[in-house]
Length: 300
Image (cartoon, rainbow, N blue to C red; front, side, top):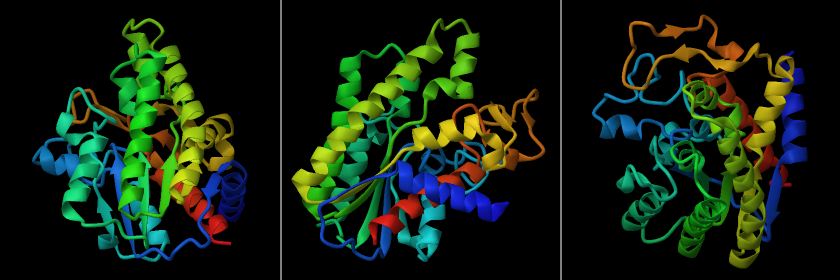
């Protein structure tokens, strides 16, 4: 069954992953630099919050999941040591935050620039962000989505200007299908699920051509991961992904601790969602496999 699943994932990656490259040859990777939010955070917010958020346990060593996040799994798949991953991603980050201004994507890029004279062309750079722009601001206008996408493009453009050559940029899952959306809807936030679904879909529609144009202009390789399709496929065909629960979170509690009425499922690997907004470690591994298959096809 595992072999069948692996073949299925590779097929999905080859079919759905858009590889935008004008470089003659993709360089070998000796390091991975990650930028974004809690989907890529390997403990940064945990350190900032002095171990208070996310509470670990039940969260895994400061990750917003029950195990390593996808960039850690991908680093391992690339045959690199864990310290080859340099992670700037911070839980709660937005492209340009209104709540945590020091943590947003632009400042992550600034911190990188302050610490490096140039961006190594032999490193891999990942940028996955945008969900918090819409989760926190469900009434955002389409114009704000345009700004969000532009801020992502500008950040990648800055790294490219410093010498970065190869990027992985996932799009957003349908945020309206997350337990977070259902929870907000149940709290009488009328139309919350439809609003964040629209925003995430528009985000993806705008992001794809914007990255294509950037790849050509900056002479870089951008591997776009269609995680929207990956999650939709898992929700529509859970057996193919060996999961059974595609709607509820395994951990029903909050980031800051384990409330008295919280519960944790017995088999997290059977769930897509660890909590109301984040995937389980199992799904993080699937995303890493998806990303790795995209890299493999681009290296041919």
